Length: 342
Ligand SMILES: [Zn+2]
Image 1 (cartoon, protein in one colour):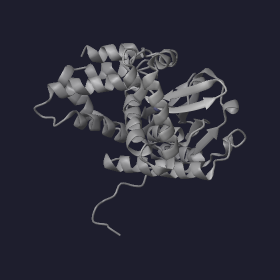
Image 2 (image 1 turned 120 degrees about the vertical axis):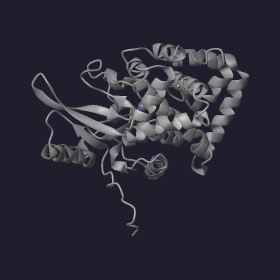
Image 3 (image 1 turned 180 degrees about the vertical axis):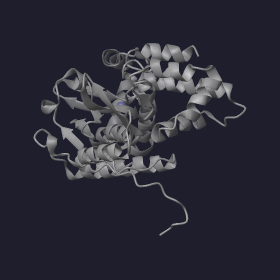
Image 4 (image 1 turned 30 degrees about the vertical axis):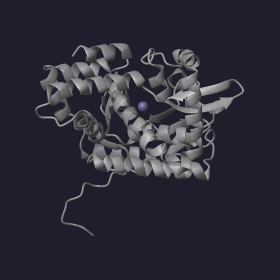
């Protein structure tokens, strides 16, 4: 074994840090045990989840390895997400509450698991799982809070996301920015890994054929996109919009297209990176270097370098304001406008 280099302790579960008023080591141990048990005990959803196929098991293992390789590349500690922490829920069993109604998949801190809403197609599963794996594997910290005398755990940090009582009463700061970073990586993963993987060849080829048809029938997609995409970011650019289609399925209602998510947030991030790059050309090699800093900050939780770069570029206090405008208290259009006006 190589012992000359000191290793960070292995990351065994997502929560890396716990904060709370007057927290001591013993309290920390209790919290750590609590989240370890939660991470390990995934039987609570047995009744509604469906059994995974062998193919899905393989995809879960593959996406786990791919996301870990990415974490290592950015100097973050890898984390194994076992198949039991990924729950595939059929459409009819999917939670009906407002919080989940529109989501295709999500990561839940309280249960330490990923939920996936069953859809046909393995490439869609791999792509969405990659996104959720990055959420769970990004820096995670929780805070101990008391709400009306009842103690509970609240998310403190999730990637770039930051929630605290002082800031818009736990409304997650940097939320849209965090989604933009994750989804930009997920789109890249789709194009570079999924689209080139033999496992998904049939689906990807079928999708290419659908895209060819869409290119020749642009009116049809504009109409569907207007219904589907509220952001309107590709309103005048149908060619670009077609490139955003990541899956096409056919059922009795006709052709159903799935798009990469957070298009407006990704556009905002890309604009922000462009602005930072333009103003720091003397010291920054290329825009990719700035994107990498966003990814690294999200994975490791170290925000100082990114905060300093943004404040140096656009004025003291910009980073904090960027965090506030990225919360869900503000619309994504407000988020984009803020960035365009920096
Ligand atoms: Zn997300």
